[in-house]
Length: 252
Length: 256
Image (cartoon, rainbow over all chains, first blue to last red; front, side):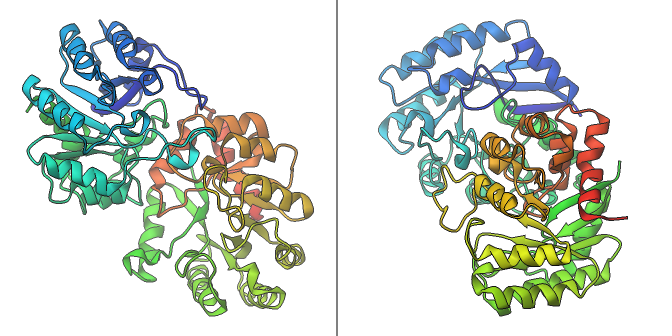
């Protein structure tokens, strides 16, 4: 299958019995499901006081594991976010950084995000907005975390119409709404599902805006390639969704 | 491997496709080796508490499909218990007159703990029907006055030990739902619900035993491919996969 996965994680998650793998194990696990390469982010950053230590651990973990490309987490709600980003750029080649607005209470339409977008542009780094990590109905009872509203995401995207953004963890209808008329947006397939997921999705979202994602270890890895195995879309579209679109997005 | 899908909604009015969509749905199921489906109806077509006419309209679609594809489709009669005992019995008797109606479907008109469930369960007992009860963990949803938590579904099954109950949506019920279901032998859980969260199928098998977990997709809300991958990706082994994907439901529904 030779997929390029837009969304995987290394680290610990306190609220579910997720598989804990090191980088080499994750790469092997993904390869067994036809995923040749993957973007990987540090899970511990979701609840850590600041993401620096998790990012540094991630860079150390993926060193020498060519199938995994580090995507650090930046928290623009903290006063040192510029240092967080610069520290990552100083340590390794970074093509994408991930923002967790729900978990870090990041105001997507606030001044810090505007500055973050500008700094990423200057540094040649793309942005990924993690809309949800898990189904909000299944969050731990002691926490109250909800994904950003679609209208807020739309306002953010429309404020930066020329900035390429990857939206991760959208549901089917959210993906259709947010991708429509916004060619700068890419949406990943991790949570997108309906009967004949790919045909349904491509009826609503231009194929060039859709990328493969397994969301390992949160979701069953086998489910992501399963969407493609018997999908009735053209081989060219399949190739683009599996790897080409993400590579072009990162390289542009 | 052939598959029996215990949780589908082949008539889905979102795209106004009508009954023709059901044939497309069955063909799509066939591409994944799904030889038999349980059709539950488009249960939210008229909101969470349909009236008697709306209920009949939904069930008419199911009866039509069962008659059209008797080898491929088992139908469940959708009920709104809040319409009262007489309405429940009338609709059950209308539906069970059609061969291939093997169960009753309960959604979110009321909580499974409510007294209005008694005639539903009595009807299930009389006609030997399986009851599929929608369930979801209500810890975050806060709708328990009409929306069934897994603990409510288990209580229902315990109150009526002679009725076979399917607690829907393993992923929505979660770990707490699985633990609630332990020791309740007339209740099985179907594997539908939400995204394919890792580990929950294996957890259910570990805690309940492989005989109490049955495959359900919730298609078209979900993709057959993904729903099956929840099972085949769980690392259970071929025997357990066959049990969950086919044998358990076949035995539960007493299919040949």
